[in-house]
Amino acid sequence: MAKTDYKKMVLEYLQNHSNEDISRIQLISECGISKSRLSEVLKSIKNDGYTIISPARSGLIKLETKDNQIILPTINDRDIRMWFIIFLLARFGKLSFRDLVLKSLKVKDYESDYSLKLNTKKVFDDNHLIKSLRSEMTDPYLDAPDIDVASNCISVTTLRKDLSVLRKLGLVSTKGSPKAKYELTRKATFIISVSTDSLFEFCQKYEEHITTTSELLPVKHAYKKIQNIISWDSDDHEQRRFGKLNQINQKQIDKFNDFISHPYKENRITIHSSYNGRERHDTISVGLLFYSVETGAFYALCKNHTQNRIEADRLDFVGHITDTDEVNSIFHSPDYYKIYDEMFAAGFEPNIHHVKILLQEFGNVIPRFKSLASIRKNASIRPINSPSDDCAYKFVYEDNIRGLDDFARFLRSFGYSVLAVEPQELKEKMMNTYNRTLEKYNHLEEKFLHE
Image (cartoon, rainbow, N blue to C red):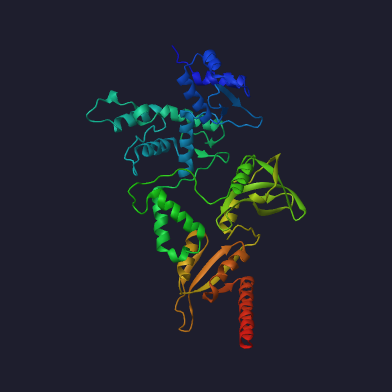
């Protein structure tokens, strides 16, 4: 006899009488459910995202619904398995079916190096995979029939079915050959993983370069939060937190959530805004979204079709968005990732400049530029070969950047410890800064002497 699904019965009854006050006694009678079981079912329905109003000691229940209400479906085992496949493909890129089996087993057993050896012959045949798993994982103290491959190891056939569903959904693609590798499509959500080892490494690097990063408040805040997450100071009670912790205000979060609710990955969108009496109605294709720690804001690096230019639009400056049916053909395009790597800060500049900077070995100048070179894809820092005795500069930093004004602003924080050599435009910007500083000092000196 099939088990009665009381949750489904109660939910359907409440949905048929949504926004109406229903007596608990009536609900118990209609669904044939006990009073205690009803309380458990209502709590489970609330956890699924439904709004249930039940004033204390009133004996009434009301399912509150709205026209624009979005209820997430219940997560089942297949959803979890498919998210796990997406996670593996996001983490490792293209994987063959055999690799997916091995990676799944590796995560299941929490081992850094999985020792299972699958037969290289007919590795794409389900029967051979199952036989290999059974033979490799046989316990010498147990009989072979006692090993349930699907339960104790991995279900090869279920994995193939899940991959088939993901392909039909357009989230995973393959060329169809039995030896083809699976990979995520642009439609799939990309999962970025952060391991405990990487968090420990971050704390180590922070403490090694603490003078370098002392002025970067977002980095300092991240360091303090990570200390709590991984118990960096070896507290008695280790803390583990799940979810993103940051200093982003609610306006930023609301704007970001509103933006990603639109089909910006597949289609062009029209953004509307108003500033200083000037209205803007531009149609854009989004290349990628990014977050700037300098400004603490989200941006969309995009192609503005109305103005025929590439730009970085700050999301909290967007008023509202209109969807279009035109296709977005540039989302996550390699060209836009390349542009993002070249940008020095959040602002986009169409021109790329090769910069060459001479550095003094003073204070934390060299460590800070070494840290910068480690995160900039095209950057390099090297000592000057055989500098003259009267040369104050000992290192050369080179990079290809977009955003000369942003880079000049960064250089000004080092004063005379840096010297811009290339390009000429950057040299002029820095010379103007030095001249204004000297003029200010001369003015203050004259004012002081005449007092």
